[in-house]
Amino acid sequence: MFKKTLVALATATLAVASGTTFAQGAQPAVIYDMGGKFDKSFNQAGFDGAERWKKESGKTYMEFEIANATQREQAKRRMAERGANPIVAIGFAQGSSLEKVAKDFPNTRFAIIDSVIALPNVQSIVFKEHEGSFLVGMMAAMASKTGKVGFVGGMDIPLIRKFQCGYEQGAKFVNPKVETSANMTGTTGAAWNDPARGGELAKAQFARGVDVIFAAAGGTGLGVYQAAKDNGRLAIGVDSNQNHLHPGTMLTSMVKRVDVAVYNAFKGVVPGTTALGLKEGGVDVALDANNEKLVTAEMRRRVDAAKADIISGKIKVIDYMTNSKCE
Image (tube, rainbow, N blue to C red):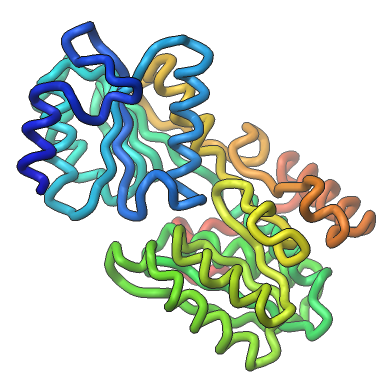
């Protein structure tokens, strides 16, 4: 199937958002990772950014959804060969393949989300997920009636531990005696798209008294949210604003502005590393009509105060990537 896809890329009939061919000149391209562009989370945030660029510019872009690891390098290489520029890769797992292709195409600009590649034609865009996770951890602890909160991660990697670490710090900031439970879904890319397993892990945590769960697991999180709804508990979404999925169940979402990263990269890649946190508007909590009945005025006040203190440096949130002990 992938050979057919590569042929389609070579003949410029696939992965162009509106049917325009590669031959019409350089176009930006985005390559989504496992889970697909409609995962309602990480990849979809990137898709939203590409669509925003398309709407505002009146131009088209190319796209490709990775189905297995072997496709990562091949898709980037084919797009570069056909003149795509810049090429934006979503996800840390695309780092090694992007580095290879970027070296072979020094005149093409690349951007990657959640990985750092030190090449003169690559922009590395990373986020301060621990800062946003701290805020939703505060909200979880304030909303919890049992004093027990949970976390379900996707693939067990340092990046997801970074979410967990920030979340636990925020919960303990509000309630030093809070009990936290955490599970990772797996150790392979399949962990991002296993809602059934996500639901099982959530139910097990609920059985132990947890009444709020933060899921940082891509499509797997959908199972966590459904389990929360079925059991009358609360859940917290991630990456995209997922409050609308189950109003009354979704306490909030830790928004990670992958959409802004892709949009800005399409407008022009700036080689080097760009780090986006609360100060830069790269992460935040989602407050809207879907969760307004769950978020009290006191929650808003305390979260706003903590946000200001994190930005000013008064509150220092530990980054798991630099302190794996989370202490």
